[in-house]
Amino acid sequence: MAQEKVNSLVLRYADYSESSRMLTLFTLEHGKISASAKGCRRPKSALRSLTELYTLSELLLSGRTGRYTLTGGSLIDPFYDLRLDYERLNAASVMAQIANTVLPEEDPRPELFGLTARCLGLLAHEKLSPSQVLTYYSLQVLHLEGFSPNLVHCSVCGGTADESPFFSLREGGLLCGECSHTVPDAEKISPGLLKTLRYLASAKPDDLTVFHFSPGIENDILDMTENWLYAQLDRRISLRA
Ligand SMILES: [Zn+2]
Image (cartoon, rainbow, N blue to C red):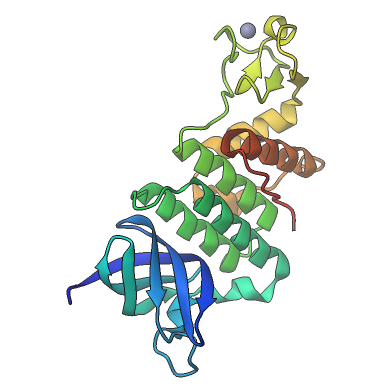
């Protein structure tokens, strides 16, 4: 049977029968797919390490859409150090949950794949703050999927937002003072929070190695990002360990 090589991250799995696993994979080539890994839980199975959560591998698959079977492969990065720290492991789990939620089946998202692999690497190898990586990842995923908040102009009139603007989840971003009176969920947004949101919206993954939340900003930005995820994905995802 024809085999195909794919670059892949394991987003989740469900064990079945005595020794097998159904994997949900995020692949560079096909986006999100399911694949069965028969016998992978046997102690001596060559597939065992390839089916661990969040592992980045080059996998060999046989079969076709909807009926892939894992037949072999080689590890690229197991991100082993994620497992040494509860907060990092939790952040990886939340990233996988976000990716699984936004990804349609069989629709390649190469940029999102690269972002996910890089952010797992920042957590595992660079030991960056899990809440910073998670906030960045969430905002970037929403950006790639076309759900960025409007952080420059008023979301209602399109005019320049004031020095100290309002924010509305319902309207999708900033509001000027005048429009804030017409929007029920308008709330003041602090200059520090806005500055951090703007920074994270445009930062590259490597920028995070020299970035730190200013004191007092962490709770506000986690709240804001969780609310934004909920507004866009219609799903409550907690970014806190
Ligand atoms: Zn306005």
